[in-house]
Length: 92
Image 1: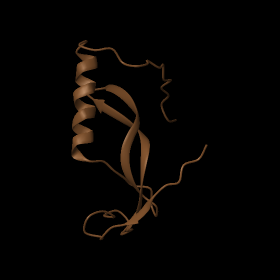
Image 2 (image 1 turned 180 degrees about the horizontal axis):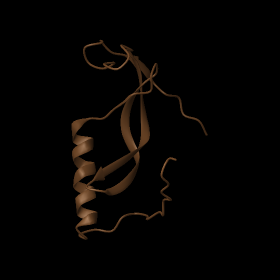
Image 3 (image 1 turned 120 degrees about the horizontal axis):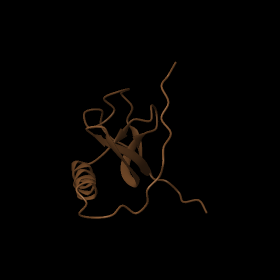
Image 4 (image 1 turned 90 degrees about the horizontal axis):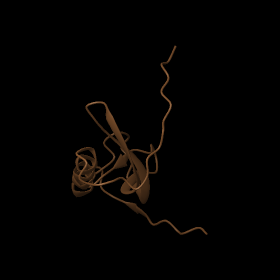
């Protein structure tokens, strides 16, 4: 099932600092938060995505909520929804 995405245009002063693009779409994306060598993957994070270069912009309250959840989990106050094992490889 596909849903229609709403595309909108915004003035260059608000977004598009990387490429100058003005066309954006609101999407749910995956966000990897890291702090002092610890990582957490957040899925379904709301973002504004530039249709020209793909740069993702997040509202401040979204990032603050991610940080709060990260520390709740790493300080063992709450459990994550899921845990995954991720391979690590050095680039040779």
